[in-house]
Length: 336
Ligand code: CUA
Figure (spheres, rainbow, N blue to C red):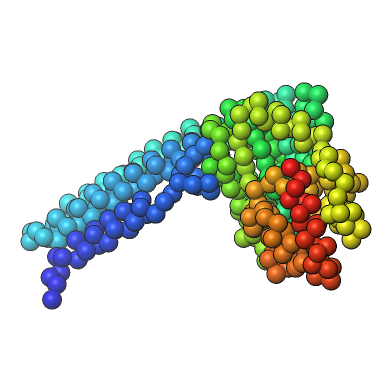
């Protein structure tokens, strides 16, 4: 039977294992605030480290004291001494530590939400709107490049601060690119502003961070941070639109009424009800981060979107012949 004084040791061991396991489970990757790729995320990560290391040190000292107390057989303290211990250890110490943490956090705040210079007008920001359950993205005109719409994929230049105006078409969604910075809610009737400065190139994932309905967990967008030159030429190409060769898939896309909701710049009328599909084939995912963007998946999605993404507004097109769906899927995935 274990002795009483073994208990603190067991608590210590269990805590140590928990910390070690957390460290072992991979925290790197495309959707992690612990692998910062932006200035704001770096500040948040630093705060996290200070909290974790500070918390661990305090916990280790408290458990250490507890173990010493449990092993020693000393006579009980006088009331005066016990009172002094509580005053220093239970009041003064927490007050000093909490005040220090508060000071540090307040000092970090300007870096986490940098003050935007007044010269950034709404017309220069990328507008991101939360929809059911996807992301409408409007790029503003810049340096002779026209404005354009896209969906579910954001591209940003490395080393440059980009400002976003955040809106919602229905309920509250939340804009969050963990690798680049903190969250900002998209609130009905409001426009929230956030800015981010990516510090390295890469591909990241941004999940919706506020419960918004049945497919909340299937509402994400990709973020591709590029070198400024590549970014500039991507913007020019986007604004120019697709110029595919006339195909059977394109004819069917129009014939079956897909054009009523989805716009493809350079090809169809600019419908805006559903996600814009210009250069759709170049996107990494389908259905706002739900599936890999392959021809088979696009066909599955057209046949029955509800089966893949419950609550989605797009109706099922399972009444169409399989070869028509296949032709449309081929056409869309070839829009590059
Ligand atoms: Cu949109 Cu959760």
